[in-house]
View 1 (cartoon, rainbow, N blue to C red):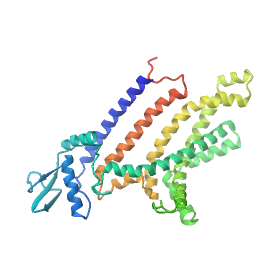
View 2 (view 1 turned 90 degrees about the vertical axis):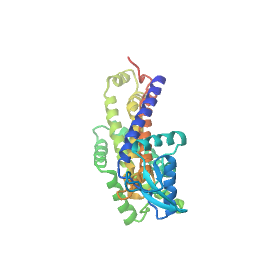
View 3 (view 1 turned 90 degrees about the horizontal axis):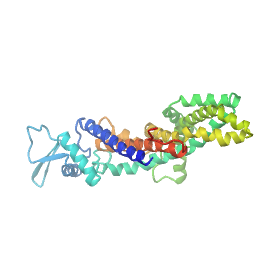
View 4 (view 1 turned 180 degrees about the vertical axis):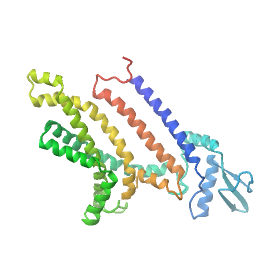
Length: 347
């Protein structure tokens, strides 16, 4: 397991490096954008910083070979014309800045000249809170409903739960949140219509969690319910459970000691996969409800008129890293849940 774990971590680093390298070249191949700020001093400071980071060059006069400059300034009687460097030069500067300074670039639109990694750090907690609360709510409800449906197989309870699951799992989360905002916020007035500002009361902030959490949880609860029911029904009809009953165990003892334990081997790792799923799916929800998370930040950075390429790069790096780490934990968790499973064994 240790050897396998080390190999998976190294492979994750290589995969992340390849993904981010391809993303960098694709993003930098888009039309260059300067800093979007009405303050000339802010724009000038941004370009000077880009020169220091190795992304731009500063020439005292306009270059015919390089074409039109990103922007020109005259400070203290000295002319400054800023041009972007070739993409390959920017790439090596980008790698060097990350390794030596942990500097992922500067924002050009969202917070002009602010560190992109700092902007992500400010927005990440909001996304994490929403997704963690959704998982905490959906896991016990989904597993509980799945167990109930599995134990009451082919009864009216099973049919009712299965029908509701099929209905709610077919509705996209952005449709659910639109309906909840209209019904609970605009019509009833029970909940905030948009994510509250930092100076709002604690009660308003708590109530603001209800709509996005419910929207993210519906699909997860349905997924867990369907998965748990299928696994439990399969285990309940297995031969070893019948053998346990013939040895004198009661139905409840056989269910608790054998059926549930074996059914949870594929169920528990799926919780990690579900977390990643809702983590990525919260982008549209954050945008609709105005949640200041990295999902909403991703949409803002992709603004068609003024895209913020550097923030977009860091945002994509976060999603890539989370996805790769979750994959590693998902694989390793099988061995901890069931000692019979050994990842990486040749036999």
